[in-house]
Image (cartoon, rainbow, N blue to C red):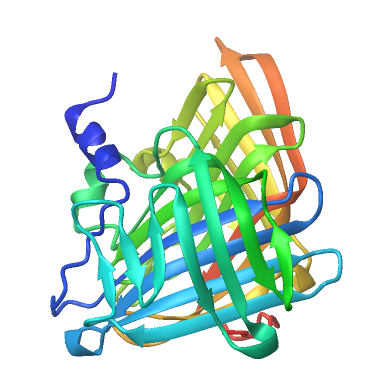
Length: 342
C-alpha cells in the first residue's frame, strides 16, 4: 500500500513546479514520445521553460520536436523559442501547458516548431498509460537533492493523429509511448537515461532506468542507477538511494550496461544504438553553461529479469526490443562526434 507522500506526488505528477518570477534558475519540461509498432520510426516532442539563474525576466518557453526515421537515416529536428512572460503558462494546479500557440494537456497536444524543410508540426491525442511511475523514492521529489527530478506521467499511452515532418504527414495512430515530466534547478552533470514502452513480444512491460553522476565541487559522486520495471502487473522498483549506488552500470558512446539486484530479484540490461540513430541537442543549464544531449528513440534494448528464492534462480525472463528504446546521454564532453542539430 502506497503512503500518503507517494500518493500526493502521483496526484501532482503533471502539475508544474516553476514559480514565475523566481530568481533561482530553473528548467521544466513535459515531453511525449512514441514508436511505430514495428518500424524504426519515432517522435519526441518537448514543451520546456528555461529561466536562467538571477534573471527571471529572461525566461523563455521552448518547443522541441524530433522525428526519427531509422529507415532513411534522416531525422527531422526543430526548435522554437519565445519569451515566457505573456506567451507561456505552466499551470501549478493542473496539467495545462502553453508555449505560445502550442498546447499540452490531458490527452491532447498541438503545436509546431522550425521553418521550411526542418519544420515539424503535430496535432495528436493520447490515452491510457496507467498510473504515474516514479523513478525516485517519493520523498526526494520535494527534497533539495537531487536538483533534477524526473517521472513518467503516463507510461504505455497510445497516440493518435498526424505529425508533419519533411513536408509529409505521418499518421501516428496506434503508436505506443509515454508522457513524461522533469524539472529542476540544474541539469544532472552526467547521465544516461533509458525507457522502453512495450517490448517486442511483451507489449505491456515498461522500463525506466537512469545512470547518473553528480559533481559536488571538484569531486564526482559514484554512479547511481535507479531502475523501475513494470512486468506482468508487478512494479519492480530498484530505486532507493542505497540500491541505486550499489547497482553496477557503465556507458559510453553508444552502449550502456546496467545491473541491479536484491536477494529476491535482479534486473540486468543493455541499451545501444548506432551513432547515426542519434541527434545532438544543446541544453542550456540554469546556473550557466550548455550541456550536450545525445538523443535517440530508436535504440535496441535487452533486459533479463531473474527471480530468486533462498539464493537460487526460480524464474528467468528476457525482454527485448530491436528499435523501440529511448536512449539519451547528457554530457559536457564535446568529443562525442554527434552533430548538434538544435
